[in-house]
Length: 470
Image (cartoon, rainbow, N blue to C red):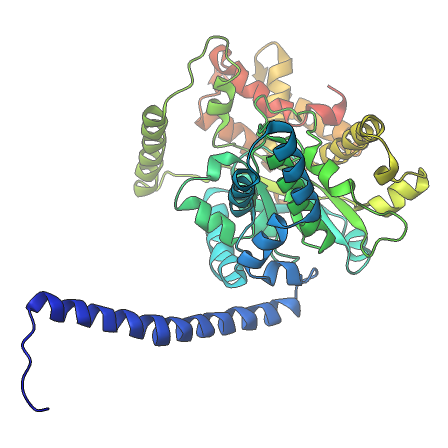
């Protein structure tokens, strides 16, 4: 029993690694998980005491459980059976595809990451790049939303910064679950985005099975009261104007909504976003240019690096300015229980064609509500005047026309954001931004939009064109 046993070095190393792995798997990992779950639960308990919309149990459910619920959802299973019978595809193949779709869609919300890391990052990034402002907010209407309602923020889509900006400004209200396009499905970005509770959407998928899985996830989240953020336009505005709504996600939310006896009301909150400068403006406009070749990944990366390098150089020389104002407005809530009740509608009982007609009208009304709360900022105001001027303007004439435009918009019920409450300063700020970007030139005391940059000027003017009927 006391004799020495000789082992080859590789066997000793292997036994040591196996022992270390066992200790890690049986002792350290469970302890770490317990510690992290405890920290997360403590954060959730603290947040639910101060958030206007509490974090629902659905968002705290383990991701694996949600995936299983989605995979074995009755309507998903029925769709699998129908496709297997009609297409002659083995059911196991279709079930594997459903599993893949479910894993792709279902988020992995982490309250600690969202509020401790994500909020800190979004706040720092937003404030670094812009002068962030909260415009109009119907606080009385928001406070009157019935407890337990499923709240959906419907927003216009100007920039990829929208995600950061709205998450930061809405952080005192709730944790938002975004519908995110396929552009973000790259490692490690997709892992971080899932941690914020976002779910991925293949907007151009023609697979009925995928659409059924997505529909059932959105139904599950909506029925469970998860606060969501949706871009009805389905993508970024290319010319600055509001785009017609894509009704797929709205249809999924309303298809099973009971306006009379349902446990929860479904409340849409229109959100308007605008910027003095959209970081992607030229890239978006390039897609509208006839015959333009979209830059490849390397060229796009090179352009981004040049942009970053130029701004870092300006910072080093204390000549850097933030990209103007970024403003978000929250409109009056629209209750679907009230909206459908007043019209005697229950979309569950309608045929697909009948439901599509009502959804189209509802989508138009919601887009009008979103457009009504988009704030008019200094750059769009000054750009509008210069685009329609047709001639060089003196500073005095430019200010007079911009002031006239402000009054016209206010009379029409629009929300005009005036920095510092000083109209003269607002016009100066907008003109300075356009001049620094070389979109506007000054010669002999006269200001005019540069002809080769007129498409960029129109892009900013278009963001408020709908406010005065243009």
